[in-house]
Image 1 (tube, rainbow, N blue to C red):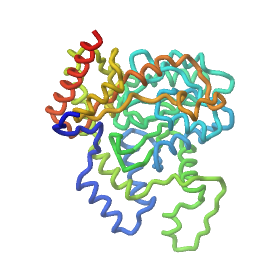
Image 2: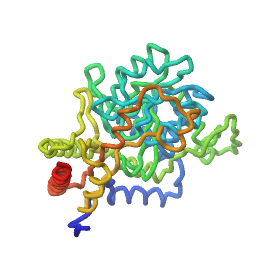
Image 3: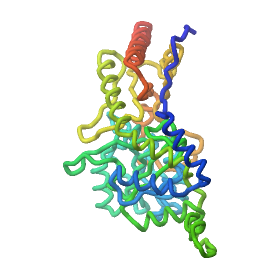
Image 4: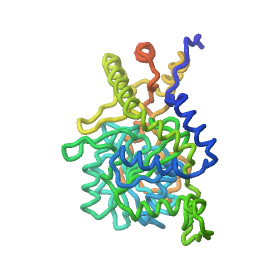
Length: 393
C-alpha cells in the first residue's frame, strides 16, 4: 500500500458551533423530546419546500412506512417501485404486508424508467413509489400523470433530495412541494441536511398529516406538549395502534440550523459537480452522471459509470491512494431478504439496475472539498483507469 497523503471521505456533514449551540440551548431548556423545536422545524421545512403540511419523524424509513399506511396500503397490495435503491424503499412496502413490484431504471441514469410503469400495473396495484435517486429528481411529471390516469397515488422517496428542484409547469419548484401525494425525506449524516438521523413527510392532504401525527406518537390522542401545558388533568387515549416514530427537539434544533445553511450547501455542491464533469470529460473509461434540463440536483452523491474497468479493483486502487468511494446503488431483489419471490415481483427485466450496481462508484463530494482535492481525485481516477486499460491491452 502506498503512503497516503491524506484521506478524502466520500461524504462529510456540514456541522459547526452553530449546531452545537442549538443542541445546547435545547438540552438546557429541559425539554428534549418532541416539542416546540420539532414544531418550528416542521413549519420552516414546509415553507422552504412550499408544502401546506410537514411532519417530522425519526427517519425516512418510518416516513415511508407512514406514507404507505396513510394511503391504505395493506396485505398483498402491490406497490410499483425500483429495486435499484437502498433497501429501506422495499422494506417499507413489506412493513405494510404489501408486495413491491420492481421495474428497471432508465438507460442513462439511476431513476425509474417511466416507460415501464404502466405495463407493471395490475388490478392489485395501489401505489407508485418513485425514488429521486442520489438527489437527482426522477421524471415526476410523467409519473404523476400515469398515477392520475389510473387513480393510483404517488409517493416520493425523496430521502436524498432535500434542496433539489424540478421544472414544473414552467416554474422551478422544490422537491417536497406536493407534486405527488406524499414526499418522504431523510436527515441521515450522508444527506445534504442532517439531524444525526431523522425524517420528514410533506403533503397537501390535511387528513394524511393528521394521521402521521397520531401514528408517530403511539396513536396517542393528546400530544405531550398539550398535556404538559394544560392547567387541567388530561388522560390521553389510544384509539389506534401507533408507533414510536418521533423526532427529538435536539435533532430538530440542529435541523433548523441546517435548513438555514441549505441554499449555500446546494450551490456549492452544484459547483463541485460541474467541476467533476469538466475534469472527467477527458478521461477514458468513465461516464459522468447527466442532469436533465428539467431537473436541478442537490448532488447528494456523485455516481459515475466505469466503462470496462472492474468496480472493486478500481475502488481499492483509489482507497490505497487515500480516496474513499462507495459501490453504486444496491438492488433489493438480489439480497437474501428478497430472494423469496413471495416477497417481491419483477415487473420488468432488471438488467440495467444490475449493471448499474456492478459498474458504478460514488466519488467523494462534500462542501469542504478543495480544488486540490478535486484535481487529486480526478487525476488519480484517470491514472488508475489508464493503467488498467493498458494492462487489459
